[in-house]
Picture 1 (cartoon, rainbow over the protein chains, first blue to last red):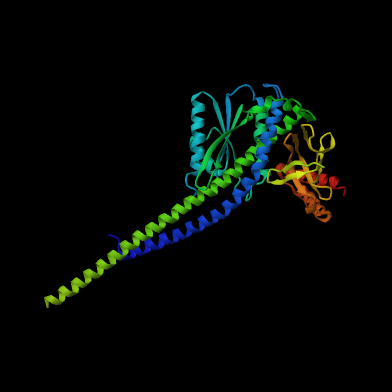
Picture 2: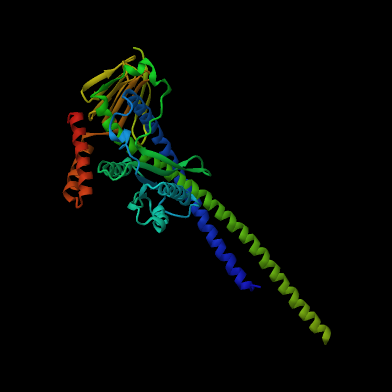
Length: 292
Length: 133
């Protein structure tokens, strides 16, 4: 049975924790709003980009075109770009992405493929390095970046492309968490290289054939494809950011509520043992008086 | 004049979306003006100024740096790498930015920083040329 002082200390410490989690929840909520609007502002560009790419790629013969579109013709070496958060205290956010990536790695390894991993974000690296230290070829640290700009994503995109051009891998897949709502973040895998083009149903119509391109379709594709990769990375980073704050907000909300429950329970326990103590003392006094 | 739909998007945001009468764009193979019912065309962009005429009296100018213009049956879409409305820029500010960029380039220690600084400098120079300063 803990003493009254122990109980008092325990309540005080839980109260302090509750204050912290409450503050973190509010900070996450404020940042979430910003991250969410950034993610939403970037969506039109990514959508148009996809549409334009579909248009252009629909115009060239299947199987031809730059290597970024068609791939190297092999799928022996896989590069996994795993985007996670830089911080913890966000529930299962990082773990969910890492778990998805890990399942992917294991299934690829079981098929006899070679896997390389590029981590974006410290938390994913921390979790993956225990198991796949040798496969990890790099870590991109974005901790010092407060607002993710297109420049950050572009740098990562260029790195991915230069590695592809150096022939270091055949297939590139991006892992991140798509932001659906504050309580729902969906870990997602998106294939970057070879580029996946949405099939346009009306691509076969005559309007498509009349598409003119300046300077030429090949040249446009050659600039469009690397750009598309950077855009996809950028979208992934923004979605991740919004998901992170969403996850953190709900995790901190839970923590605050749990702390509240605990305070209530401990307070009841404290009051009970205080009353029991008083009753005991009274009995002692009364029985002492009766004995006289 | 008949209006058509025009959208200007940069990676960070949607800058313009609406009905316009004509748009002049700096295409890779020359300046061109898009009107309603233009034949579908796709072009890369040079750094330059996009002139948007919403009506005869209401025009706006936007500086774009690189990107694509896509004319389809639905209208014109410009995917710009960098887009800045001209009203937000003035000569003094650009001169200051230019000076900063030159200093950054001189101070850059690593290759990475040097590359970033020289890219910034190029961008400002292109902007100056585009504005005719």
